[in-house]
Length: 394
Image 1 (tube, rainbow, N blue to C red):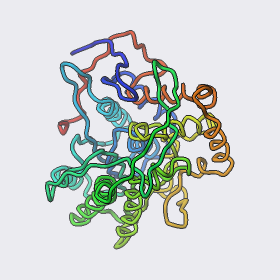
Image 2: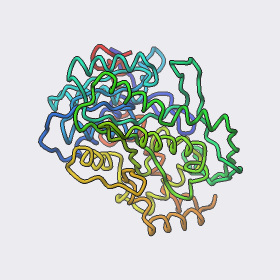
Image 3: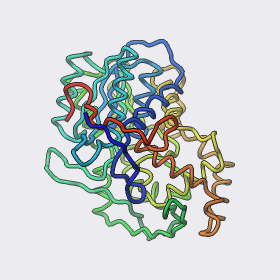
Image 4: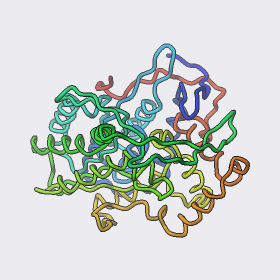
């Protein structure tokens, strides 16, 4: 047992430690916001279940529909010097939550890209349930090792076609600072590598592996979570190297959608996540979006409830002309985007604290690591040696 006081020490939007009690409380608070439905026999596999929208989908599925299944993520255990990663603590609490709901939900801590992980997970599915109803794919990784070639691919945050300069939000001693950030042009190789990391190849391998093992139950459906976003962030996101990967994800959905497999991408709305906070311009955009919408900004847990309602047939699919599930219509409404653009254009180094909801954004980033969570005593020692749930932790 190792208890100590944890402080939010770090640089920029990255923190050295995570707060176990704060991470646990976040899971509890999210689940408490979900209206429950009568559980029915549904089994799901969530790839990327420890953070962001993957975590929200896991919590929403457990709390609303009482799903059984498996969550896969790749987190670091506590060491003598550092706490575990925030996702480690969130997963531990999600497992406790699942047990309280009376559900059988396993968590595997391993590289989702590895064939060995797929074998382990599929063996468990075959042993426990004989198949699954749903697969949610939500992986955001900076690099990927292809287990079949041994080659390592690195994703790039770059523009395509021409360099781009964007306004971006930073903080100095807790004060918001508006910066101009230049975005280089991606080479063809960088674009290709980004597609390899963040495109649809690994998602397709998961579905194919399940299909080959005959583990797809009748009515099976699968979604890969994606984002489109605003024209304001388009050059670095949707029209950039990441956007090329997202386009590949959508093409993969069309390829997978056959022989009893319904495959779609789900376009989520903007949110503060560990992946998005690292992208230039996204922090400023989301802080302006919250300034415009306030509490009307839909959280990942709200969007995940809507996603599960559609996956289970409780509600009809809300599809666009490309066959994508749209959970982001609230964000891209014309009046909302016009208001955000006006704030974006008005933002200067002198007025950024007033124009943007920067304080909210910084607090949301800190909450990703378990800090700034209401009801948590940050002066009290907290146990950092929390075990991974079950015997399958790494």
